Image (cartoon, rainbow, N blue to C red; front, side, top):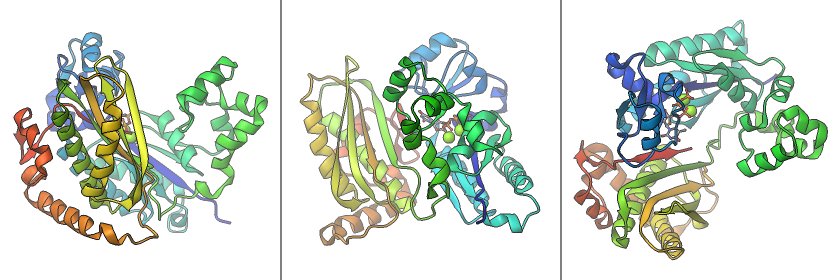
Length: 395
Ligand code: TTP
Ligand code: MG
Ligand code: MG
């Protein structure tokens, strides 16, 4: 059997690196993307110079301002990042038909079949890295391994800017601390740490059954082969912290409608169907609730996502007294095709597709539902599109 080779590539400090590329005065400076330090909301990302001060993705902008007072704060321009991301993915696809985009700045590339064309997979991987760097103008990190997990962890270890090949994945991963392993939740991590287990090899030694369930499948099952049919990303989400806490239900509904609209267009553009939807709210006192449910059938339609999303929101709003600080929506169980044909949804899906075409040509907010109209009162419209102040993607 051919041994599989998986290359993983991730752009370094992506949003911040784009800002530096477009404005060379920022080079070498602590750049923080996401908003201004006196604003609510969180940091999308920070340049490596800013990370030295402890600033990282997901940190409150205010905290970032305290940690790095001389930081250069920028709001971020999602449409620019998205265009560069497409360029990045297109460049990778020239090297292999099997490219799996897993987030805006990262992809797995299956190089198993390519090794007969190139003398060395290692040399090919290096060439791919150099080519994307030249064509995008951004620095990337790369990891080559025999499984997705191995390749991804190699990239993490190679950051920033490096390239690692993991020849012996099992011993490489054994030496890593558990928090590096994607898929081990915080809760499990805390329990294991309390039991004195910090590294993968300690887990294997002391609790082989847990190791077998969590780590071993990466080495032995077919899951190590990049799968072309199903996107590996299991969910997509959009959320926003409001400029001021909101007590008006209609205004909250309006924000949710906007985020669902964004997600629906994203699903359509990428040819995905979503099987589940989750809504998240954070009240002023920072208590956070989520609620999710299966959709009646896998869909990308705004109407279908909305109907279920609104039910979830109303259930969540009963949990506590308003005002609310944040609302978000996530879709899960993502698939490229569906087995059942839902007759009832066809109309709603056709409508969503039509609307999405119009948006593509004339701007995101050139057409939208009346529910979203209220947002024009509080946000600027730029490039034919309403711009939320602190929109953020979550992984
Ligand atoms: P990452 O690849 O996780 O981070 P990064 O590229 O900024 O830094 P590095 O890979 O060198 O560690 O995420 C890619 C982009 O996605 C990031 O530039 C900004 C955005 N993002 C968010 O908006 N919110 C988040 O919580 C995270 C983690 C990323
Ligand atoms: Mg990155
Ligand atoms: Mg990434």
